[in-house]
Amino acid sequence: MYNFKFIDLFSGIGGFHQALQNLGGECVFASDIDKYAIETYKGNYGINSDCNIRNVKEEDIPQHDILCAGFPCQAFSKAGHQKGFADETRGTLFFEIIRILKYHKTPCFILENVRNLASHDHGNTWKVIKNSLKELGYVITEDPIIISPHQLGVPQIRERVVILGIHKSLGIEKINVELPALTKNDVNFFDSDILEKGKVDKKYYISKHEEIVLNCWDEFIKGVKEKVIGFPILAEEFGQTYDYTILGYPNWRMNFIKRTRDLYENNKEFIDNWLKKWNNLDTFTNTEKKLEWQCGKDCSSIWDGFIQFRPSGIRVKRPTVFPSLVAMVQIPIIGVVKRRLTPREAARLQSFPDTFVCNKNDHQAYKQFGNAVNVKVIEYMAKQMFKNIKKNNN
Image 1: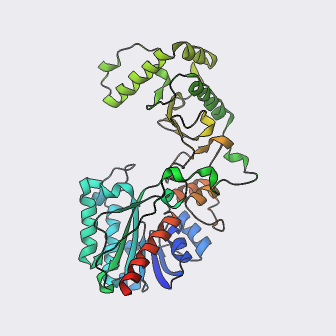
Image 2: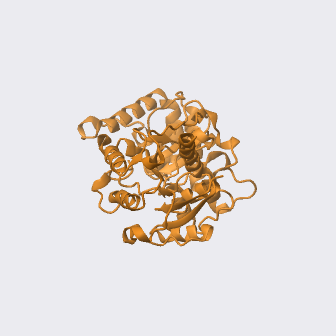
């Protein structure tokens, strides 16, 4: 255990707070603008984080040893427009961090952002961040640190960039970080303590229609000759003969159409009977007529995997590690129990303790855990930072 004070910027529901509190830290200031996250944060930590950091004067922020910030990632995420620092409302919030560090000469900081930050704008974004921090006298790693919870035994693949900084006044010349060695093959969702035991509210179970759709595709996967399918299956292309090459489709779409038609020709008798049995999928939506089988030979049934009803189709993934939790997502279905992930299970995937009180609104709870930093990851990285400081002081 250590003894230090920290501030929690863009605090969300307190992933940084939880991690540093676990290590003995005391939070002296928190800031966020999302009213639901503010509500959850106050309910768990007793701190009112309701303030826009843009409107806070540097001198009004208490003295602290560590600045924590999971600064908004939409400007750098592959899921967004990737405007980076050109994003006037979010991208420039990084410079609020710079403003505070410059005034307080904070001894250390821990920042977190999406994996794409490392390569955004051909590496120029990382250079701007690195040079801005170095100009303030901080020692950081030359390359971004990329880490995922699965490396720490948490069954979720969620690669994120973590930036550790130590002020050179502490005598640090270089930061060395030893990353954990576990791979995704070393962890398994069902061997962890993520799954809730006992009764789960019926609202999390899939609908009758969803069960019909998945049973239909389960029969398909078991019936076709191919057991490794490396492309999205487009059921509407079964039996089609129109010339798709003259319609101006992008190459990737034409490739999916061709491979789907080849699959059909190789399994024509089975697929024709399958379509007839399931009324040509007439009751299915357009997205339900698409399947992304990403299990290879590791699953013999859809019900063995993790399932998502996505705008691009139904995606089925191996059950070893969970898909990355993100803020706005179609909540994954745990095939073996035929229900969606619960907020408590989402909390566990983000390494929050069971004492953590989830937001009463499920939609907000999922969004909040998707936005949160992983507690174990931040705790591990904080220990790495302390290790560098201790080593220098010996």
